[in-house]
Length: 135
Image (cartoon, rainbow, N blue to C red; front, side, top):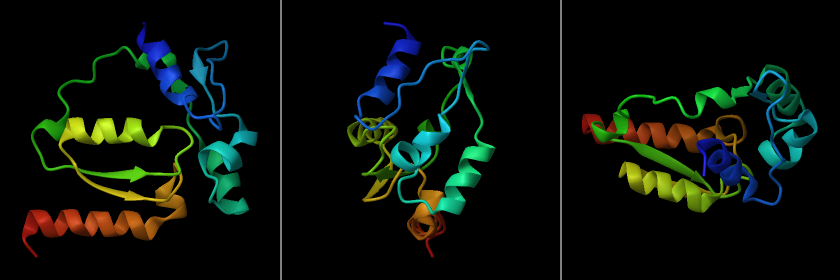
């Protein structure tokens, strides 16, 4: 199985996730009409419009390119498992967090917690700071 098939398979394991495929330029865009149902179901109408307007496409060509050694192998890591994610299944997130040996917190938020649940994200950042600094 190719990395492209793996990536598209991870995304498609959730029923609300849109069917994604590259355009003629090899770029994957999230269809604008799927932002409120699959990407940011807890976002306000204004936030949804902004998210759709500023999205960056994913190039299918970047998936097989090695990224170098991951920093999580050498530094403490935190991971927010977003339980209402309709793009990346929570079990996939848990797998990634466990592989990273990350300190995890799970919350009932969507794929865009920095937009729709920023207090949760800030709390995790504060936990990380306290853990590293001892304060």
